Image (cartoon, rainbow, N blue to C red):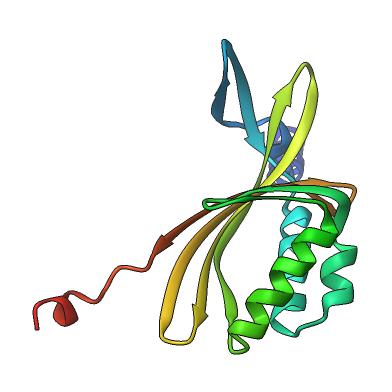
Length: 168
C-alpha cells in the first residue's frame, strides 16, 4: 500500500511540472560566420506589439511614441527610418493620406536569439494592413527591450488575390 501511495504522489506532482521553454531550441540564426541558437521567447513580449498595433489603430500617437526607443531603427523595404521623430512623421503622413488604414495581427510569436550567453528578444508578427482598396501583408521582426521596441525589420508584400477573382 505504501508503494501505491508513493506512486500516486509521484504522478500527481510530476503532472504539474511546467516545461522550461526558455531553453527550448526552436531554430538558429546565421550572422556572418557565426550561428546562434534561437529559443522560445517570453510570450509577454507579444503584448508590446499588440499594444503598439492597438494604439496605431486607435490613433493614440502618444502611446505609439512611448512604446518605441528614441533611437529606434526601422529597416524597411523601401527606406530605413532612424529615430522615433522620423517614424512618427512617416506614420502621420501615411495616416493623412490613408485615414482608414487599419492593421490586423494575423499571428505573433516571441523568440530569443542567444549571442554570447545573452538573449535578444524578438517578436515576429504577421500583419494585414488595409487602406483604401489595398490589402498588404507585412511581417515585422521587432527587438523588444524593457517593454519597448528597439529595432524593426519590416517586410512587405501584396496580399494574394482570391483565385476566383484572378480567373475572371
